[in-house]
Length: 99
View 1: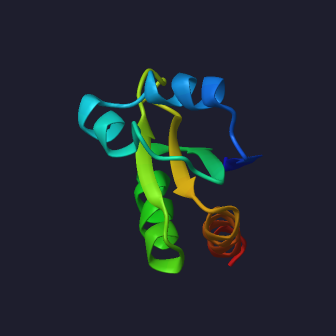
View 2 (view 1 turned 90 degrees about the horizontal axis):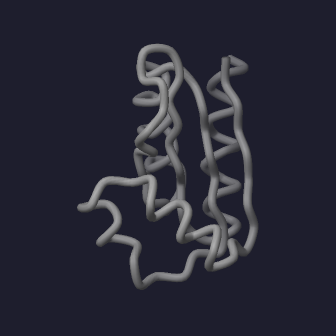
């Protein structure tokens, strides 16, 4: 199962929620930046590795692992960047899934 969500112009409170759910090293990468969009992808862990690779090869996005999920079955990653780059990353992922 693949579930994708898109957030345009994330509010600071939304960014705070995201920062609280990523590892410290990742939090430092994004703590002072403003992003035009967030893409969230939920799938099984092995698929997320593939989707992360597709995303960074297709668009200028930062990939973050969201912690606190049930890693036995499903997990979530986030893509941050401009609205266009996040949309491109999500489109590339959806096309791969459909092939």
